[in-house]
Image 1: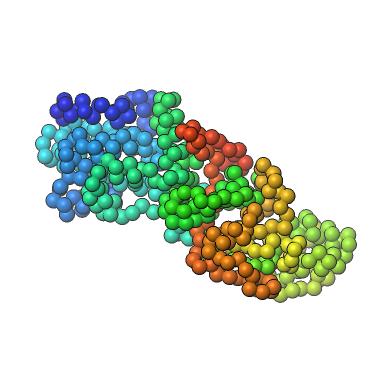
Image 2: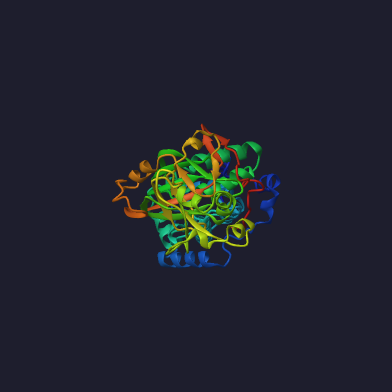
Length: 434
């Protein structure tokens, strides 16, 4: 590389952060792979794309000092926060390729390395959140096809603006990542606090476009999100520390009016069976409970058919449900979504808990401060068709719901932490050789 070009690149402090400083601050980076062009599907895709283009450059159209090239290397320096731990070493490799690019063949090689690094970076941006259960695969983040990613870059009017737009991910993500980067630079590292890294993983995996529900168990708040921006919020009650509401992504398709409450077996044993032993089986009907045969297609069974002492002892399991009505724990409506734990978003007959600062009091389900307001935002008219139990009313379209766990937010360029109520951030910060 000509000295003038090297000087131009060195004008960006972040861009030319020396590798020795990076690894000194973050020794774990030293063990990461350094070969951008290792043989894999990404490299093969780039080879095919460049063969079709006749080796025309994407990043070096205006030479090594092009804005796109500088923006890419700067972005790679920061890439550990975006899930690409080997990003700074990729930046070093690209700089070395630019320094050695004394002819057209060298320039082609450097441009190709940039495209491979860009694809690896975009793939990292679309990694699923660790610990998140994606009930429907379409809800999991997925990187666009390699050819599409490269073509978008090749056609960009301003490649530096394109890199910045892709790297911003979403309005929910960019402020947190940028605050984390400022904090990391101040500490002389390319990695942030492990808690922040864990939160970046979770927020980065949320959709950047469209409408979806975000339930944050850490703050016990539900957000209604449109194109990455929160348009409304409400309080929720989530699971206790010993009955945690899981991280899950699924879809709500309908509202269920006048719902039953299917009593969890452990609660039936601890809370209901002792009343039956003390007050007799009449306690069940008096308080709106009935014994059923199964959950899916239940028939009502005589309460006298159950050995209630065995239920208390834990040797017999009984299925019970609470009838719809003013006292029903589900309130007047619930919103079901596919998940193995059988949790719901639902109304409640007990609103006192919404006055608490910490609202981790349920058995895993999510109680809503204003179920009808949420239903109207989803497009439902929230009018029960009749008084019969379990009246399912289909929503105009399915509504994605992401139950996540976010304890770090950016506020005026600084990072604020909420309580780690489930201790999920303890020992967080997973390094991956991506």
